[in-house]
Amino acid sequence: MNPWKGLKNIPHNVWLLAIAALINRAGTMVFPFLAIYLIKIIGLSAGQAGLVIAVYGFGGLITAPVMGKLSDKLGALHVMKGSLFLTGIMLFGFSFLTNLYIILIYTFVWSIIGEAFRPANMSLISSETDSGQRKIAFTLNRLAVNLGMSIGPVVGGFLSTISFHLLFYVDGITSIFAVLFLVFSHFHERRPVMENGKSKTENIIEETELIHHGRNVLHDKRFLLFVLSLLPVTMVFFQHMGSLPIYLIRDLGFKETFYGVMMSVNTGLIILVEVPLNNAMSDWDDKKSIALGAVLCAIGFGLMAYCTTSSLIILTVIIWTFGEMIFFPSTASYVSKISPAKQSGEYMGYFQMTFSLSLMLGPWLGNEVLDNFGPIVLWLGTLVFCLITSFMILKFGKTQKISVAHTE
Image (cartoon, rainbow, N blue to C red; front, side, top):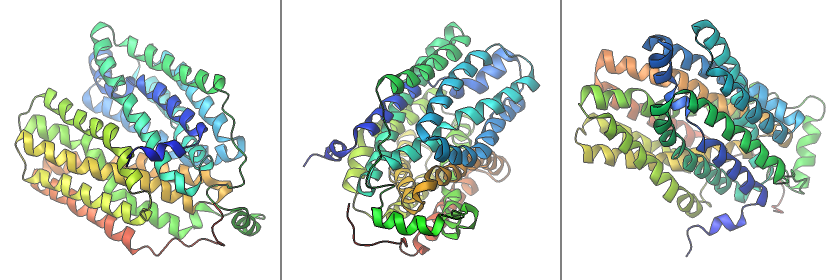
């Protein structure tokens, strides 16, 4: 049995989106080195550099729902192209900034433009696939992103030894190359019988209800409860770029190179295992997959309270990486199923807000707990947080849809 066989059923357009994501992410090198650049080259303090990153997170937080709704009106592909092109231009300009206040304003605008890509991309993947293909399609997209992220930071580390400004130029160029690829690959959004994984009959019924006023996302209690339940585990997940490196290097005395090796284990597993794993679990109910992913994250991060040797730490990384590989594609798949066909981008935008908020709060809260209460409280706290998510997800009833017999 071929564990990669699910990929052969992925639509051509989704493959094009994955290749564009790979091109773009292969040049992602500014953000991973941004704090170092701001401190070493611009001369900002660590606190000021952290503020710049927080501003980027805040921009993504307020952008996601607006740009998601815009992609529903203008077309997700247009929003993606505009985001990639303007981001490339802005990255060139960033390298000339030296004033903190201008950097903060510029970063905020950069975040608004750059983060517009995510909800539009997720919405487009939803519209280009049927419900049975969607989880593996999101997995393919994550594979492309992680392949790119295994290249960009490595190349960025080399370029930074020559000139930090090269990071901005190369990152900007690859962003524009991704746009050119989408333009010249003749990507055309399909107009299928199935929309958002629903049959024509389902959409007619659903759109009859929404034709006059639409569904207000903020009144959709099921969706709001779902994204709220994701917050604990996503805040824990972002400890890998917050309290985890500080704990390993400062408190346990490991070298920076060990942290790099640890993260390469994470990326390598995702590249090699995520597609076959999600292909094997394609028939699983999304809620059960999400709950399992949260439990594995709970075990992986929670064990850090008692693991102090390199081999045991790598084991914890393997455990929570499996949780990550199950959790993230399943959450995107679930949102695509419960969102109205004509509001897919808007729902994906609010869904993306969850991660922006977690990026803002998770590393900060983790660092505060580590400094004030110690590692035992921190890592056992992550276990509790992840289990809260798992419990809330399992409390959901079955996804209620206005449906007729499946015609997919």
